[in-house]
Figure 1 (cartoon, rainbow, N blue to C red):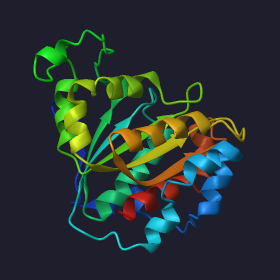
Figure 2 (cartoon, rainbow, N blue to C red):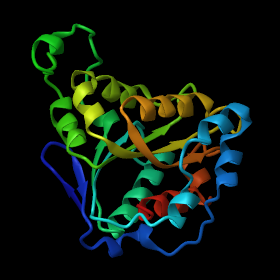
Figure 3 (cartoon, rainbow, N blue to C red):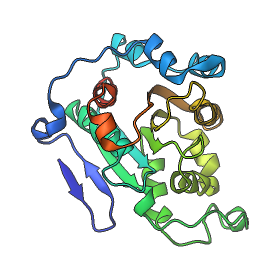
Length: 244
């Protein structure tokens, strides 16, 4: 069930999750070979080798207490390709009893980091008063973070990157607050190396913060919504959420 809060945040809870259209039973084989094939290239192989594959996750026993998951999307299209993956992941995760708090960053008022270091002298408080005042506390209290974005010039969108940049004032707290993570990426091109840069970025985030990767879905050759709807990628996102 989705509740729209007054501040624009969307919270998805396990209640009535079975009524979601995305809960239809679909079979999708998520193998390590499949992910590597989608990422392509020698660099992608080295980047993905340290990440968990959905197949590994499905084979493992990841059962436990329900998690609070914060999802940050970066697309300026509410019904775009990455939005579909986000919806599917939410459906899978809530069906397993997790709660998802979703922020569509392209529709939030978040200014870029000014590198003024006001936060250094004010106990981690940012000089800017905008949507980060609601986003950052949710991230700091989450058990898992999920990044969802279309590929823009081989990396995440500026809107999503801006939110990550603005986490700087609380970087020490974030590094002490270990979380699980996942990434969902869509792209119109089918070039072998087009996901290399964003996967390199994600791998560095895993190392620095640190986050514990739970899997990635890399959807290539899906320029428009109609291109992705008939593929296995939405089901992969759903199964990743359900594997947690």
